[in-house]
Length: 316
Image (cartoon, rainbow, N blue to C red; front, side, top):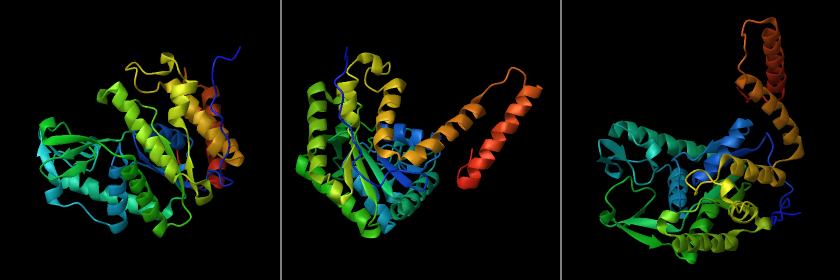
């Protein structure tokens, strides 16, 4: 008995992710889910230097500023509820002082600039097409930072605007890194605070725009995270307690799908070694001083030494 309608997945590129690859992941919180998996298995990756960015215009803004090394200045940050914030960044970068925030923001600009030049893969996960425009400055923000809603106007980005933004992102990056490959995906997280119908409108705008940009012969690819969640995992047991975010089981499932399509066979064998080491490091012994545990630690250290001889950049 088949209890699922499976998404057909196949490798779209001859060039798959391995331990020589370098990835930059940008976008919604689902980008963080994949980034944590990559970090756990010790792939080279950098995750969302400005924190979670839900819509394409915020990502385009980061890419543009990073390429131009357009650093943030005093007039681009503000204080609210005894914290300093920037409308271009997630609240995880907010700080108790203006100086600390500017330091964090400009460090993120430098990190993104370096990753744009060095990355072999960009993974961009789009969360929503709904945006908030700051009325006073007439600027679309990445995060409202709980500033009163009356100071913003809510808008739904048209498909052509999203498409133009994505094309700008690809063009900007390829101007300085012509060999980079883009993997686009839509976050499986439903933004139902916008409304159920509104969420569907938003996702449809993102998907339609993305497929105007996706072109495997140009090294622009699409991975169906949203479709896997909505179809293969069409059951609330795959959701977290909020009934919005994917559960850890769902994240593992989508990761396995991603791994099947995008991780090379040679890398998979190394992943098995890394996972053995990670589980060993997480092991809690009954008796840390026992002879058996000391032998276990010696074997574990031997595995780490052997792996580091093959991959010097790996650290545990």
